[in-house]
Length: 237
Image (tube, rainbow, N blue to C red):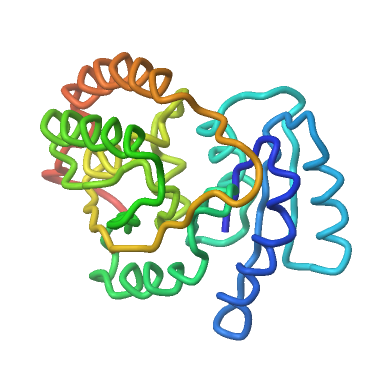
């Protein structure tokens, strides 16, 4: 489990408890928090939470680097071959993780699969829901990634598959398209979504829309460059 956070001090302990309730006794797991240069008490809360939870580890960026960088750091730090990601603001429900894992484990042997959460009933403002719907429609139409809600933080995938992706700022918005580019498949599962109870959002709607347009142009360029070639013949072991 990889959880990127920035200035989420009040959400640390409640979310860690929820993750433990959702996964404890069902499977072996670890929780890797990445504190992306927080300026509040996030790191102190992580130290306190980890004192009695051997499954919890945390690393901290010296300066804020962005959500994508935090996810990359967390996946690199993780020891498991299968990764689940979760937003650290408490709006994702950890109780949904076992269902995503079940879908992932049902894939064909040896195949690449990313399972994405789909917030079918979002608990955000009307304007934020409208902007997200437009962005997902445009992105989906151009990238054809078959993912209705790429912004949902709940995702399950293989660690090695993710580490093969090109690393760039805002890559977390385009992970399904990158999985398809790598020859894998993507499927979505409806998940819950909750109002934010503590802390404040770190993103503005206009900020997301603007960087989304720039990143989309770059990713379209990248996708048109072939990365896979079928092997026709081989000699030797």
